[in-house]
Length: 274
Image (cartoon, rainbow, N blue to C red; front, side, top):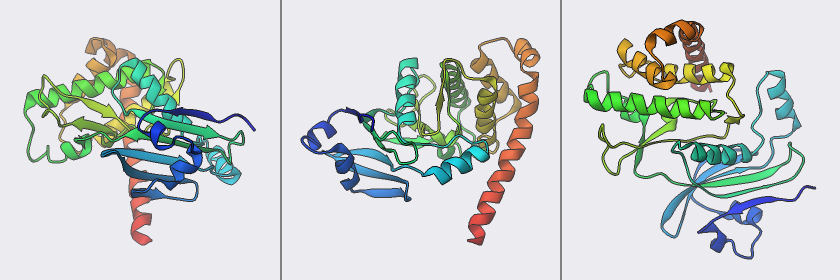
């Protein structure tokens, strides 16, 4: 069996002093957001501060094979999220702060791992912040600043070799202290457990992220000019060059958004029938 990998900062270093972290993390209590045989997600508090805990207990070979047959990369544990947090931090892209990570077991089907991240408060997801924009338009300067910030973060992330695989506006948190203004706003990217890391993001995965982002922003009242503003900032090139060099991407965005919409409707149709 391979040696466990551990990276534990305060306050968990003190809290778990002398204990087995893989046992101690399972005893944490709080509000549970997901409870499955192979994965548990909860919010806990230590010394008056909030933390999110994700525990992975191994998905089993059947789940791994099912994902591979469907040409999907399975999530095998917490390490990918831990590595993605580190990479984004190195790239200067605001994200979560991981305060504890552990992994043990060489068998990917039975691997036990966990990650603990600081709660980002006070924040609101961009999905919630933008929900009423079609009926109550925001100040133009603030909208443009948010579009440009999302584009800057996405471009830096992709150029740094990271693709998210769940790249929706709900996974951008807008910090509310201080209140966001066009000249002072902060966004953090969260939910990185499916992220992939390479030296360079392949065009296919870059485009999938951009299509997901496009889909998630379809109903918040963005204009054609808003979308062009995003593209100009994301690519850092004149629009004329973007429209010439990225014609395939622009044609595919609408098609991929339709596919995601169909998948979304199928998923919730099944939920309604359950």
